[in-house]
Image 1 (cartoon, protein in one colour):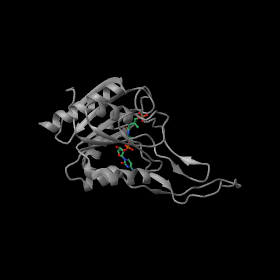
Image 2 (tube, protein in one colour):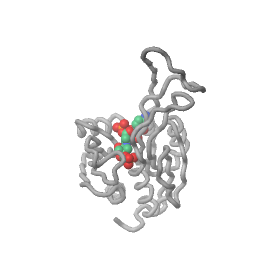
Image 3 (tube, rainbow, N blue to C red):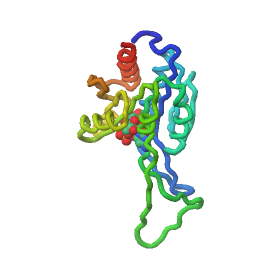
Image 4 (cartoon, helix red, strand yellow):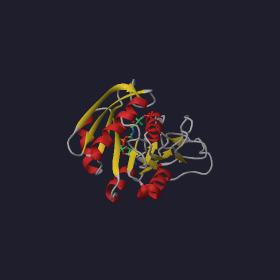
Length: 219
Ligand code: PMT
């Protein structure tokens, strides 16, 4: 990739899992480590971009030289993204956002009862969809974590969420996707282009993803 291919561009990247509270001590989350999103943030920074990283709770250290916004829930992530979307040139949604959140959150610890427990969940805002509906100039990049029918679901998301590219992750394979240091992804562009990035470190994949995006964007 060109050394400063993203010089002066504003890029917002979301990373990691969201955490949805159930009560004072329990929560609902997912297996995202944040590695893919952080690798993208560091790669974009190295390519000269002004990077805003909106991150769920992870064990990773904060990348230097990026604006860092810590969030917990899907709702907090939505608010952070919404308030920064206007000034962005590129938005990359690498976070694993909860689709559902508990309908009521107990302030105290829930007591054990006889019998089974049923919790009611409600839908969260689909941040990517919101961005697709409200974007003006922003180049919008979504991820799709799928275990099956990867191509079909990725193409569906591309259309439904009005994204410019969807990056599909075959998460059924535990050597790639959630938590692993390596990834293998396939990019599905709005113009019909398809690019397979074979298995290697998330750091290298991050540079390749940004290269594929900038080379199309400029042309
Ligand atoms: O964090 P790692 O351990 O490195 O793992 C990387 C990863 C597998 C988490 C990442 O590469 C990935 O695939 N992220 C997207 C995971 C996901 O939530 O996929 P999805 O198919 O449920 O969502 C599709 C897209 O919509 C994603 O861009 C997601 O950020 C977005 N979304 C989903 C739900 C929601 N309420 N709002 C959203 O914006």
